Image (cartoon, rainbow over all chains, first blue to last red; front, side):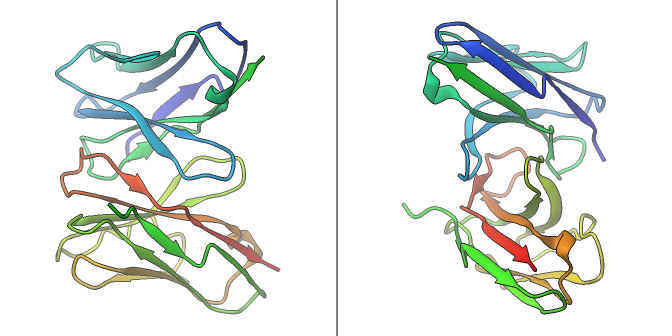
Length: 111
Length: 114
């Protein structure tokens, strides 16, 4: 199946700083790239997604960028707040209808 | 509207027993997925249902695992002769049907095998 690498595995920032999480993939047929946030003990929830015909999408403090040539996409969180602390998963589908998830990034925002 | 629901929320069982986990997808969602999430790990795909098509069982880790779905409604995941390594949170997700649609996750069932 599809392979996706997610980095970093943990990310610690001060409140107000920006956070960037990157995922790389290999299947050029991938065409849908969602990001999920999972708070401790809760279910994963979609926070933003992007499709392959778009290079960037923004929703308030959250943005996702996609570089299809280099086969990577990134989640950007600006002005981080303590409530942003969670595990973030990238995912993708396209070549296979089975979504592939990254291993997750534990984001810790220190007040 | 109602989201994806799962039951039970927690299940503790003894090694060797069978367990059945239930998922109620969002009404009208034709696609349903089961995932396993071990503590501190990512999501491991188990099985995928799409409408009345044959399910994709390629992620099931052994023949002790099976799942059924009646039409486009409830799904059950059955684990026979449970082992300690089956301990995990089992998540169900549904989507409208196209593989690039947003997946909506249930709260999960936390399974502990003693």
